[in-house]
Image (cartoon, rainbow, N blue to C red; front, side):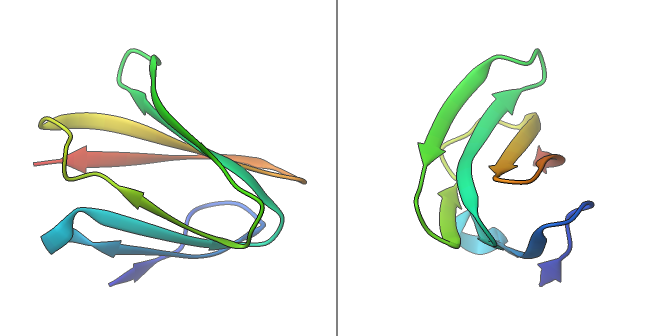
Amino acid sequence: MAQDIIGEPVQKAILIPLIGLIQFILKHLISVELLNCDGQVIEVKRVNADKIDFVLNHLSKGLYIIKVITVNDIVYERVIIE
């Protein structure tokens, strides 16, 4: 299942629910941050590539925010773990 995240420069975000993985394919990616519903940073991945895998299977049920930072933009996406 592929989903687009609102905002340029995201090309693709692929959700693989059975293993709790989201794969981001972006241009000029700098970092991806995972925040809880209170805005606290849980995990940060800094990269120098156009693709990153973000594993979510260790998280408790609830609402999370993924903050994707690129050279040109910052995009937020909600993720619900059930």
